[in-house]
Amino acid sequence: MNTGSPNNTNSPNHTDSPTNTDSPSVHRLSVAGITLASRVIVGTGKYDTLELMRDSLDASGSNCVTVAVRREKLYDRDGRNLLETIDLNRFTLLPNTAGCYNAKDAVRVARMGREILKDLNNPGANWVKLEVLGDTKTLLPDPIATLEACEKLVADGFQVLCYTSDCPIMASRLKAAGAASVMPAGSPIGSGQGILNPNNLKIILEYLKSDDPHYPVIVDAGVGTASDVSQVFELGADGVLLNTAIAHARNPVLMASAIRHAAIAGREAFLAGRIPKRLYATASSPEEGLITSRPY
Image (cartoon, rainbow, N blue to C red):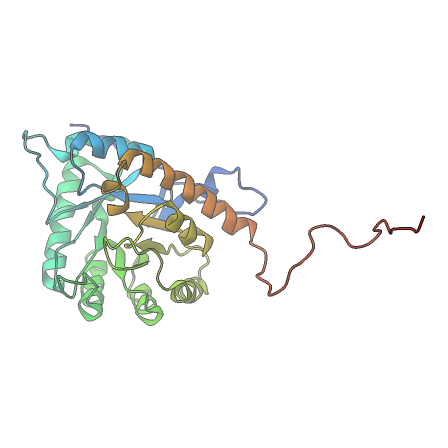
């Protein structure tokens, strides 16, 4: 098993500039003191084989993968370990608390994940993607339990990347509680519905970035295809986390590649600045100095 550190950049980011889209910093994501080479974070579940997972992760361009500490089947039918398939010299591992329905369980699972990653010497050891779910049908977050768990984990030295609903007030409270990143859902987990409420996402971005423009907001859950990823970045989000959209695609490797390019396109479109929407047409050609027709 590889036990080296991923190839991350820990130096401070340069300010992204719409005129400097060739700069690598435009496409890097800085969270909790670690700078990732891609703004796409991918999951490791639901793949038919470990080889398909490995190839899809590679095609996505990501160098951060999330692993469910409680649910993840670390061994396949042939007894092979999931972590032996992931290149730990490349990927930062982000343990998550998927499958937890109360704050106590989420805190316990987060601590388990930290111990596993410490043994691997992985820089994500103090990270946790916090999920505290309300029920098994919707998989929507329990806001009260999520806030409680976030406060406890922050006090315990974790860098908490916190899954939440698209409620701006809840997002603000999680940031105030010390979350290293707030991760609003685009739509329910695994639903593939995309961004159901872009207006709320815009408000979240406005609220959380009002005093810190570089605070990372990562959209988590609901992505169905590459165009959803592009929309996430065009709205101004800093990153996206997804799993099912790739793992359950007819061709996961090809979908992963499409998402990689969609993230780049959406980010550059946001920095470029879209034109305003207008009710009526606007001529593309200048109206001054037109050639006028003359009678013969």
